[in-house]
Length: 129
Image (cartoon, rainbow, N blue to C red; front, top):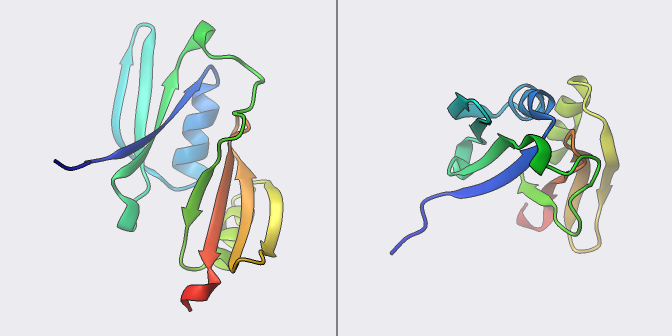
């Protein structure tokens, strides 16, 4: 018995902006798309060691609740060079929601928000160096 993939599902009525953010701004690769009447979605993969983790952007129209940020849930991504990630995202004009800083437990991190306000943390474990 094994787990094969992890999906973070982003229900939205802001489909085009969400797709552009994850695909173009974060550089994720589309692995699957569907576009049927009332049923549009895209799977996007991170790549690298976490290639089996995907973001699934699904257009829900009236079912998505606009203007409501996810509460008490964030996406946390460990990277090998957090300063370079920070600089690259700034070059892509992604607003930095929480500045790059060192935490007392040994992480160096910063936060961004997707178009619907979902917080994404990029961090590097400085204790691994």
